Image (cartoon, rainbow, N blue to C red; front, top):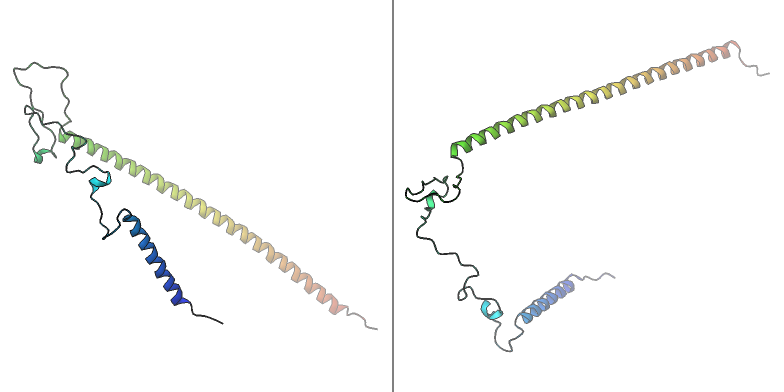
Length: 180
Protein backbone atom coordinates (compact mmCIF):
# COMPACT_ATOMS: atom_id res chain seq x y z
CA UNK A 1 0.00 0.00 0.00
CA UNK A 2 1.09 3.54 -0.71
CA UNK A 3 0.83 6.14 2.02
CA UNK A 4 0.97 9.85 1.40
CA UNK A 5 3.76 11.19 3.67
CA UNK A 6 4.29 14.82 2.60
CA UNK A 7 2.33 16.49 5.45
CA UNK A 8 4.10 14.48 8.17
CA UNK A 9 7.51 15.35 6.72
CA UNK A 10 6.54 19.01 6.62
CA UNK A 11 5.33 18.80 10.22
CA UNK A 12 8.63 17.28 11.39
CA UNK A 13 10.57 19.97 9.46
CA UNK A 14 8.73 22.74 11.33
CA UNK A 15 9.17 20.97 14.67
CA UNK A 16 12.92 20.69 14.02
CA UNK A 17 13.23 24.31 12.89
CA UNK A 18 11.34 25.54 15.96
CA UNK A 19 13.47 23.43 18.30
CA UNK A 20 16.70 24.68 16.72
CA UNK A 21 15.55 28.31 16.99
CA UNK A 22 14.52 27.82 20.63
CA UNK A 23 17.90 26.21 21.43
CA UNK A 24 19.90 29.06 19.88
CA UNK A 25 17.84 31.75 21.63
CA UNK A 26 18.19 29.88 24.93
CA UNK A 27 21.98 29.81 24.58
CA UNK A 28 22.03 33.56 23.89
CA UNK A 29 20.09 34.30 27.11
CA UNK A 30 21.74 31.68 29.30
CA UNK A 31 22.55 33.95 32.27
CA UNK A 32 19.01 35.36 32.67
CA UNK A 33 16.40 33.59 34.73
CA UNK A 34 13.38 35.80 33.99
CA UNK A 35 12.18 38.43 31.54
CA UNK A 36 12.90 38.82 27.86
CA UNK A 37 16.36 38.31 26.44
CA UNK A 38 18.33 41.54 26.15
CA UNK A 39 21.72 41.91 24.61
CA UNK A 40 24.32 43.59 26.78
CA UNK A 41 26.32 46.57 25.56
CA UNK A 42 29.80 45.78 24.16
CA UNK A 43 31.68 47.23 27.17
CA UNK A 44 30.04 44.78 29.60
CA UNK A 45 30.96 41.78 27.43
CA UNK A 46 34.68 42.25 27.92
CA UNK A 47 35.28 44.46 24.89
CA UNK A 48 36.60 47.98 25.41
CA UNK A 49 34.12 50.70 24.71
CA UNK A 50 35.10 53.03 21.90
CA UNK A 51 33.50 56.06 23.51
CA UNK A 52 35.31 56.10 26.89
CA UNK A 53 38.67 54.50 26.24
CA UNK A 54 41.62 56.30 24.70
CA UNK A 55 42.41 55.31 21.10
CA UNK A 56 45.19 52.77 20.55
CA UNK A 57 47.19 55.28 18.48
CA UNK A 58 47.14 59.03 18.77
CA UNK A 59 48.33 61.14 15.90
CA UNK A 60 50.90 63.78 16.86
CA UNK A 61 49.68 67.32 17.13
CA UNK A 62 50.34 69.39 14.00
CA UNK A 63 53.47 71.51 14.08
CA UNK A 64 52.51 75.20 13.70
CA UNK A 65 55.83 75.91 11.94
CA UNK A 66 54.94 73.55 9.07
CA UNK A 67 52.22 74.77 6.74
CA UNK A 68 49.33 72.37 6.21
CA UNK A 69 48.34 71.20 2.73
CA UNK A 70 44.95 72.45 1.60
CA UNK A 71 42.47 69.73 0.63
CA UNK A 72 42.05 70.94 -2.95
CA UNK A 73 45.80 70.83 -3.73
CA UNK A 74 46.34 67.19 -2.69
CA UNK A 75 45.66 65.91 -6.20
CA UNK A 76 48.19 68.26 -7.78
CA UNK A 77 51.94 67.76 -7.99
CA UNK A 78 53.83 69.31 -5.06
CA UNK A 79 55.41 72.64 -5.75
CA UNK A 80 58.87 73.06 -4.21
CA UNK A 81 59.23 75.98 -1.84
CA UNK A 82 62.61 77.65 -1.65
CA UNK A 83 64.37 77.51 1.74
CA UNK A 84 64.47 80.70 3.76
CA UNK A 85 67.29 83.07 2.80
CA UNK A 86 68.67 83.39 6.33
CA UNK A 87 68.86 79.65 7.08
CA UNK A 88 71.90 77.68 5.95
CA UNK A 89 71.22 74.44 4.09
CA UNK A 90 71.37 71.59 6.55
CA UNK A 91 71.89 68.14 5.06
CA UNK A 92 71.00 66.88 1.59
CA UNK A 93 68.39 68.66 -0.47
CA UNK A 94 65.00 67.10 -0.86
CA UNK A 95 64.22 65.61 -4.26
CA UNK A 96 60.84 66.49 -5.61
CA UNK A 97 59.04 64.38 -8.20
CA UNK A 98 59.48 65.48 -11.80
CA UNK A 99 56.99 67.98 -13.16
CA UNK A 100 53.77 66.68 -14.67
CA UNK A 101 54.85 67.27 -18.29
CA UNK A 102 57.88 64.99 -17.83
CA UNK A 103 55.61 62.33 -16.39
CA UNK A 104 53.29 62.71 -19.39
CA UNK A 105 56.25 62.40 -21.78
CA UNK A 106 57.38 59.23 -20.01
CA UNK A 107 53.85 57.84 -20.17
CA UNK A 108 53.69 58.66 -23.90
CA UNK A 109 57.02 56.88 -24.49
CA UNK A 110 55.82 53.83 -22.57
CA UNK A 111 52.54 53.90 -24.51
CA UNK A 112 54.40 53.98 -27.82
CA UNK A 113 56.66 51.10 -26.72
CA UNK A 114 53.62 49.10 -25.66
CA UNK A 115 51.95 49.79 -29.01
CA UNK A 116 55.08 48.65 -30.87
CA UNK A 117 55.28 45.49 -28.76
CA UNK A 118 51.60 44.82 -29.41
CA UNK A 119 52.09 45.29 -33.16
CA UNK A 120 55.06 42.89 -33.09
CA UNK A 121 53.12 40.30 -31.14
CA UNK A 122 50.13 40.70 -33.47
CA UNK A 123 52.31 40.16 -36.55
CA UNK A 124 53.98 37.14 -34.91
CA UNK A 125 50.56 35.69 -34.07
CA UNK A 126 49.39 36.29 -37.64
CA UNK A 127 52.53 34.56 -39.00
CA UNK A 128 51.97 31.59 -36.71
CA UNK A 129 48.33 31.36 -37.80
CA UNK A 130 49.36 31.47 -41.48
CA UNK A 131 51.96 28.72 -40.90
CA UNK A 132 49.43 26.62 -38.99
CA UNK A 133 46.84 27.07 -41.74
CA UNK A 134 49.35 26.19 -44.45
CA UNK A 135 50.48 23.05 -42.63
CA UNK A 136 46.87 22.02 -42.04
CA UNK A 137 46.00 22.52 -45.71
CA UNK A 138 49.11 20.60 -46.79
CA UNK A 139 48.12 17.77 -44.47
CA UNK A 140 44.58 17.73 -45.86
CA UNK A 141 45.83 17.79 -49.47
CA UNK A 142 48.32 15.00 -48.72
CA UNK A 143 45.55 12.90 -47.18
CA UNK A 144 43.34 13.59 -50.20
CA UNK A 145 46.15 12.47 -52.57
CA UNK A 146 46.63 9.26 -50.59
CA UNK A 147 42.90 8.57 -50.65
CA UNK A 148 42.79 9.28 -54.39
CA UNK A 149 45.64 6.81 -54.98
CA UNK A 150 43.89 4.15 -52.87
CA UNK A 151 40.67 4.75 -54.77
CA UNK A 152 42.51 4.32 -58.08
CA UNK A 153 44.06 1.07 -56.81
CA UNK A 154 40.68 -0.27 -55.72
CA UNK A 155 39.15 0.70 -59.07
CA UNK A 156 41.93 -1.07 -60.94
CA UNK A 157 41.59 -4.16 -58.72
CA UNK A 158 37.82 -4.18 -59.21
CA UNK A 159 38.24 -3.88 -63.01
CA UNK A 160 40.74 -6.77 -63.01
CA UNK A 161 38.34 -8.87 -60.93
CA UNK A 162 35.44 -8.04 -63.27
CA UNK A 163 37.57 -8.91 -66.30
CA UNK A 164 38.57 -12.21 -64.71
CA UNK A 165 34.90 -12.98 -63.90
CA UNK A 166 33.87 -12.21 -67.53
CA UNK A 167 36.60 -14.45 -68.85
CA UNK A 168 35.48 -17.28 -66.56
CA UNK A 169 31.86 -16.77 -67.67
CA UNK A 170 32.86 -16.87 -71.32
CA UNK A 171 34.91 -19.99 -70.64
CA UNK A 172 31.87 -21.69 -69.10
CA UNK A 173 29.71 -20.75 -72.07
CA UNK A 174 32.24 -22.14 -74.52
CA UNK A 175 32.72 -25.30 -72.52
CA UNK A 176 29.48 -26.05 -70.70
CA UNK A 177 29.76 -28.69 -68.00
CA UNK A 178 28.60 -32.17 -68.97
CA UNK A 179 25.90 -33.52 -66.83
CA UNK A 180 25.98 -37.12 -68.14
